Amino acid sequence: MTSHHAAFLADFVSMSSHGATQGGGVDRQAATVADGQNRNWFRGLVEGHGFGVHYDVVGNQYSMLELTPGAPWIAVGSHLDSQPLGGRFDGAYGVLAGAHAAKRVQEKLAAAGEESSAKFNIVVINWFNEEGCRFKPSMMGSSVYTGKLSAAQVLETTDPHGVSVREALESIGTIGDFELPVSAYVEIHIEQGRSLEDRGLAIGLVESTWGANKYEFVVHGDQAHTGATIIADRQDALLGASALVVAAREIALEHSTDQHMVITSCGEFNVFPNSPVVVASRVNLLVDVRSTDPDVLAAADAALHARVAEIEKMANVRIERGAEHVWGAKAYDQAGLKLAAEAADTLGLSHGVVRTLAGHDSTNMKDLVPTIMLFVPSVEGISHNERELTSDNDMVAGVDLLTEVLLRVVRGEFVA
Ligand code: GLV
Ligand code: MN
Ligand code: MN
Image (cartoon, rainbow, N blue to C red; front, side, top):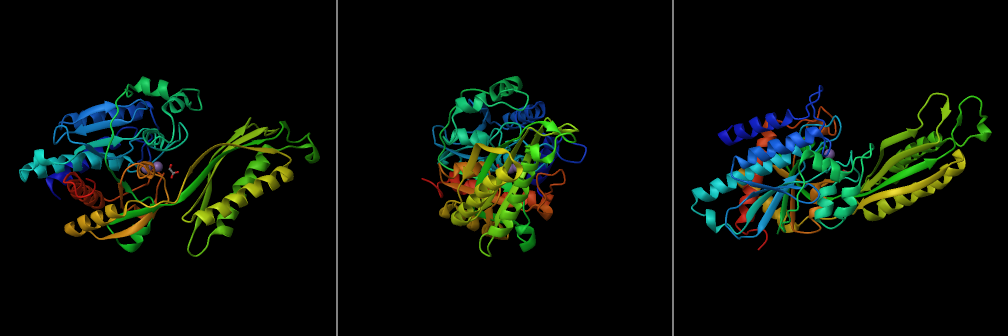
């Protein structure tokens, strides 16, 4: 363990105290007090190391380390926000790793007498609201940066209590008008699955995303008495919504092939008025369908919509489809994969190619600039859970690799 490793791990422990939960995780939903505390802590940390910090119009936080004045910028980043009762590692690991790696790159260049000949400067970006739990959709800050969502629409988006993104960001003081184009993007994240652990690998080189279709459904019924209203007269929104949850699982099982798995779930489910002795008038739920293959995904998606029509008849309800959040199965930059593999070989780190089931800010960024996405192992693949864990050794190996990758990128070995 080097002094760099010890410093990283100490900072990781400090960071994890913000929004810490009883079960060993964190609750730092986007633009809450805990997220604000952590953002301000991170700002103080990096300012102490010579970075300048700015915010853009949707609260993305840019920590800038200038190596060669006037040179273009490359970005490294992830997100500091979390799910409710989330783990300490998801997103936060990558932002802190980015700051430590950038600083180490500066030291390495200085030691080699190359500091002011770097072809790029480094900005560490903490993307606003990757998780999408308080404000939907997920990957919000990077979606605005990459032009997939408008800032105006995002700023007006409200949480379940009617607080807008603009109000929430203003209340924690992390909003501005900064803008910065970047030439390339690098992200490191925990795997959130167990393929690296199963294969005994230290590093995953992400070759592509899975495709995902996420839909908000509203099941409309009619409020009634659970005893006095006879079955024939009911329009039970909860029955319809429950059938949709079950249908989603059945579709995953029916449409998965040996080559292409289908994964579906319902993550959010709100019943109105949710009262004893009342047949529900309405349920709002979110269903997502994912696959590695666009045709398999399209078939599963069509099956889901066919089931929606059947469920409307069976439960005597109307099912409305609301907002959607969709991204395709798409490759990351091939040259980036090769660069990262060579960097891992130089450090003697075992590595293998993986695909990402989960969405990340890099899912957006890879559509804008050449992007490299790296994974470190997750113990038992546990994620979005307070028990999420990546070992200290795996974390610092990831920071070492990120340092080596960034060094190559600022020397102009990835993009010109
Ligand atoms: C992230 O937004 C995900 O849905 O995986
Ligand atoms: Mn994440
Ligand atoms: Mn997450």
